[in-house]
Length: 614
Ligand code: ADP
Ligand code: ZN
Image (tube, rainbow, N blue to C red):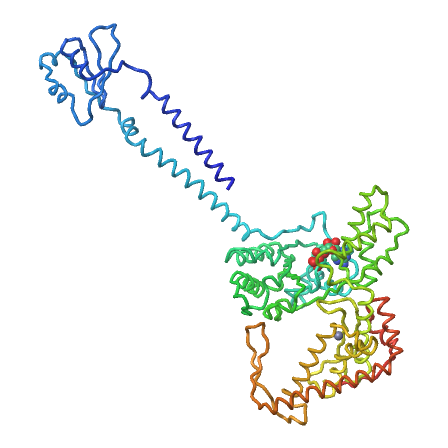
């Protein structure tokens, strides 16, 4: 809009200039005395006229009297001079005394006079069009510019280079990425061994857990360039730009190989395709397709590794997760106490912190904080200290900042109160203990009360060996473990205090039982029959739609069987938890203190048990 005004001013000034020039031109200069045609006729009749020069429609009259000023008059352009004379019945002998000069107008001035009235408006219009197209082109250029060089490149020699030292905690993630660093440092070493270098790594974790930081650190460690682009940037672009931008990004990275491409928020483009609630988004799909095409297309030994980050791995299109694409996945959890302490130490560097502030205590007070929150916390504290004219950051500032960050917009849901924390600890301990003492459950690897995604905490169990088939016994034990959290909450806090926390567990348990009896024939009452016709529909977010192919009476039996199995599992869980109540309390104490308990520690508390290896 501002440009438009500017252009109008330019055009206006240009017009003024043209008008000015024209007014100075000899056409309008004060010249000969203007007279009427009849005066000229009189003069001719009086024999005073020496010569008449016909110059277009102008008649320039020179009088015989040398002192007289030259005169000028005009004739009609349709009439010739001689016609004019005969109209005024000038006597031929008088006329013959006059020297008649017919001047051809010089070519260009004649044409200029003819064309100028047409040319000037045309020129103006052309100018306007020119400026307007330039503006539109500007927009296009910018769009094309997106397509060409949207990614921000961080060269290895740049100053704010990050290394693993800058990433506190996140030990497991760092270990897994160490391998990627090795690939990038010396791709040849691996290709000579015939090993295929992974193309894609997916970092999964809540916002602010340091995914970008880790990707940068990988680039920094390997000393390779880092190309950064965000999935959400594609969404607002014109159709086709996203795809061309992806193409360009990969071309650039390939030229700079070995290099890292970092795609932040990949879920913005990588959502399940065709899950068309709200219509499909062409641009998104094209961009995603282009990413897939590029990832399939490049030679894995080139040394280009794509690192993508998301906090919603559940919504990702399965095509992204296929082998040869993002087949490596690294989960980054919210930091536990020990990690938080380390992160705080990293960010406390360079800040004068008073001696009365204990970093450890600070870590204890900030469950649920992400790395970014902690960095923000110390920053806020520093700002507060400056504003109250202090030389050091004291406890007062720190405590105030904790609250400030906690009340921040996205934080409310994630930060746990002490009571929540305890309840989560009991809940997870419940899962873990039931899983530990039932012979058919997998070994417990890790118990944590630091949330992951929507869950308040998690219990990680993994089998010792790969198992192909799942037995009924295993199903039953796992069912009890799934209900372990729910059962514990009820036992510990009383039925009235049951929270909404276990809703997901109940859903999972119900789905499990339903599959057991309807698909695997695991109920004697219902017999060896597959009930329902499973049809995976792509739309409606890939929910499984069940077609009913059984009678109402059978449906009742199915319901009853589902309830019976769930009830049995609940009893099993209750039995185990009551038996091991003392160990449960010890476990909860440990969890509240450390927030994560690893396998070794867990087994130390619970004692070893024999697992029946399937
Ligand atoms: P994400 O990409 O997961 O949303 P970022 O990598 O952008 O998170 O993290 C934001 C900021 O939080 C980082 O720049 C860093 O200052 C801080 N941060 C997050 N995690 C850590 C960590 N593990 N160690 C040190 N700082 C961290
Ligand atoms: Zn649970």
